[in-house]
Length: 320
Image (tube, rainbow, N blue to C red):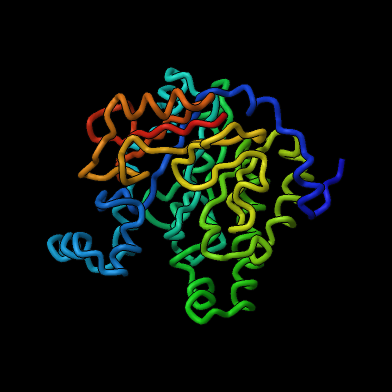
């Protein structure tokens, strides 16, 4: 079947059976924000905004720029095989990795700003490729998280600051769309978890219908891939193979559409941070029992991430 780039057609696509049957997965947040490991993965944004505790941390540690974290993101003890073994032992059925978060630093050769990815600086490795290969050594599915917006990208920043529609379209055409195509064709993800959609009101500005039609019609993943609903404000809770909605989404009523509850055990951050504030067992249990499926999140440190220890953060992703 060929899907047309319109919601009426895209929304009729059957949910792949594997996702309906999977009950636990792992979501890995790892990037430059793991270097300061302070406040949250929004460290750069909060620094630019002047959040007092972040500014104080920057001054105290004599941090010159966010870019200075890139060469320190070494991945010195990075062992994707060890990750995969841990995930499998935990009972995971799928693993999703942050291929690119809002800061734009990519764990694959993105078409964003030159030198702003893990191949050209830092670990000098295609992290997405390595994790994908390790995960697939076990009966688990592999997926990628991708931020539509990109704070670091000059084209996107100019478009946002100047409210330039044509410049935004240039970013989508030259960076975002090609990046998603590369992720799908090269890594064959079973999950494409889109985020950063809230930066634009309309899913049309992200060319969401066109992108999803291309994904659903691509031979590499057409029968396998699932996508969420974060493709623009009007798309949330309306379109996508499953609803992820807002963070920590807990439906107050029975939904007839597949949904997901992504929540962190740390009450504030999705990535590892020094001052983690973990929810207690009763709080976690309440979230787990209200959903059918669960997602455990691993948040590595800048150099290493393997085996659960006191310096790793975890969260649950639940979908029902």
